[in-house]
Amino acid sequence: MQRIGSIERPDWKRQATVLGFDYNTVDGKPYWDETAYYRFSLAQIETDLEATTQELIGMCYQAVEHIAGSEPLLRRFAIPEFAWDYLRRSWRRQDKDLYGRFDLRYDGKGPPKLFEFNADTPTALFEAAVFQWQWLEQRLAAGALPAGADQFNSIHERLIAAFQGLGLAGRTLHLAALSEHPEDRLTVEYMADCASQAGVTTKLIAIADIGVTADHRFTDPEDEVVAHLFKLYPWEWLLADPFGAELPRDQTAIFEPIWKMTLSNKGLLAVLWEMFPDHAALLPAYFEDDPRAETLGDYVRKPLLGREGSNIELVRRGVAKRQPAASDDQVYGSEGYVRQALATLPEFAGNYPVIGSWVVAGHSCGIGIREEDQLITSNTARFVPHIILD
Amino acid sequence: MKRSNAVRLAVLGVGAGTLIALEVWSNGGEETVAADLFGSPDHCKSSGRYAAGQCEQAYADASKLDEQKAVTYKSREDCEADFTPGGCHEATAAGSSGSSSFGSLFVPTMAGFLVGRALSTSALSAEPVYRSCSQSTDPNECRRSSGGSGFSGGGGGGGFFTRAGYRVSTAGTGSSATVSSGAFSSAPKSATLARGGFGARAAAVSARA
Image (cartoon, rainbow over all chains, first blue to last red; front, side, top):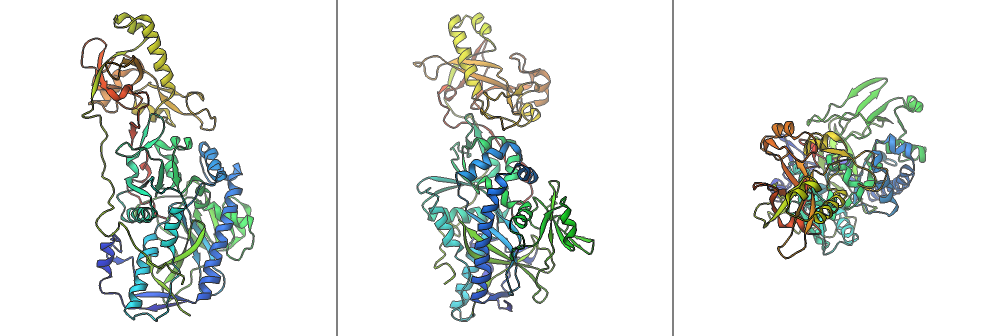
């Protein structure tokens, strides 16, 4: 694993804008950054990243079974009790999930370590699946990369196959997001694109436009019943919202399904460590009120329902360094915390990469790398492409 | 090869795919029918507009439909904010979902019932109605004057709504009212009673993770 400096394509910004990837630069700083790329060997990709990710998703599915069957854990995960039956029903009938992103610590030497699993509303999808792929193809065509360079990235093909697997061809899938956020919007637009290529009719709506009828069905702004919904909006927010009580009526097939709440919660880290102690891909992790949490030494304190590095604390020799709440002033943590043993990110010339390893319909199928110039990855990280070359 | 053979986009990049803009749902332009609005069976009988048996039947039909409530709320406050102070009650298991796992749920209380016909040729139908201040011209005055779930009163421009969200117009005299013809169709197709119940947590926040 190396970080290699590279020359940017002269017109990449124009290409990004044409595709709707208009958050490629944030506050004057690059978010998409092709002044460098990471190079992996095929063995690093296949043995370390691909295989470990496949193993992790298998472990996660076992964890869902365990958590869904445990009222103390459901309570600890702060999943509201009125949704428990619905969650268990969704899991038992095997409601399909589409995608998720494991964030991994990896330095090229030995197995990666799981930081967390973005199982419910993962983003940075388009740049990994599409823009990174285009970068590779164009650099290969220009002779700017060695012939034979490849990329761990069949995310796009896997997504289309996943939508084909839903059996919705010819039917309508509504896709809802917070319309005011460019990244959220592009993620649902891209999802809709993949769904349409699988023969699904798609309709994009704003999450706030969803209505409810007398017979407890959700509707879109044209009063069409929402029978199948992809929502880029966290389950814990859906349930807490005024229409939350309607959800257990189970009138709409929702993606990700509600059982993903058991995986998007940082409590998963403690549960995995309990179920698979000393697993090579796991870091020791405990709920904060577990006495064993005191044995961790240096650790990272994570809110159960945090996102994007918000309110994460890094504690070294008892001294806390806190990641301030994200720019949007989001505060997390009222639901409790887990502590995870500290594994510092590897450094590549002052840059600290985190591997986002994608799972689509249960298949490990690609990575996207975000790097920071600090130890906690936040929503100001830069997306840097990668290649495979032995 | 570890990457996609081809990445083709069907929609993105050709100027399509923007989110549907916010639209306010309304009954505007729909066909209306004449109907009668009553607060109780006795109110209906004393109007002389229907036979006593018809009034009892209409009230019974409306009460049954009332059990198929449109919206449920997790708190009385939220429910009353959408309807009227004192205009909501806790749902019984039978009246809501039949499941006891929901915890307390609150629903608007039926304030009266509507009697009419979807078409001049069709049979007499009944619909329960609910009083709401949320779309009134002066919500505060409406709430002050509404005083619970009762039928009468109504300063501030509060109004009566059917289960499916159709507004009942009571501009005429006595019990006479008009309402969208859709209000009496046996299965309101997918008329939306309320919108905006999702997205509250994230006015300025991205869902990204």
